Image (tube, rainbow over all chains, first blue to last red; front, side, top):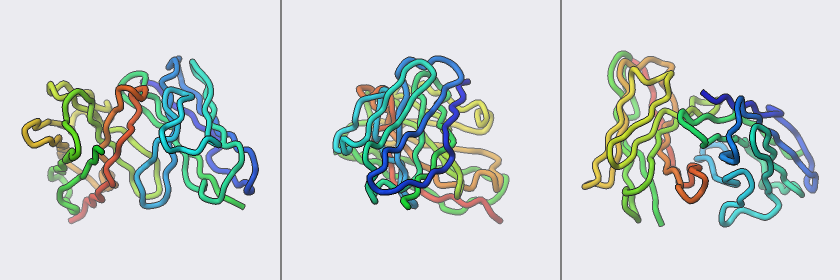
Length: 107
Length: 119
């Protein structure tokens, strides 16, 4: 089974900051890496799929990069509405596995 | 557009079976994998398993012995059963679609349904 390790587990940043979250897979998953944002009481929302493809309707300040085992989600200029918990998900093979989450707080 | 809606009892007694159904609206259930994912309060997301319209399934090894999924294409629904539940199965349960053109990411989610295991 593929293990996903996400870091940091939490972070606090100011509006306008550049924020980076990383996810590492225990084996190569090509580009089968996806990023989600979850707000309290809501289902996760797909932001980035296939490592770097922006989901329709997601602001362009969100971007993803990486391949193989190391991946990054970047928010280029943090906005107040970007608070929440971010998860990575590998869709390379079953069982699917999520990172443990990164809780993002706006200072 | 396609929407998913989970339904089922919100309270299940320990040792009994948890049963949930996900109804697909705004589109057909065909040609996709459909998954169940759960999230205990304050914790992360756990993939339970998935089913294809053929009935082919993949389950999380950690739950495999207790999980069964099924699909009813005539009703545009798929279902989850978890047997011998304990308090550790208390969680919000989500159904989701794997987007074949989205790197197999879960691109559409239900709103989630809270299931509590308690006597």
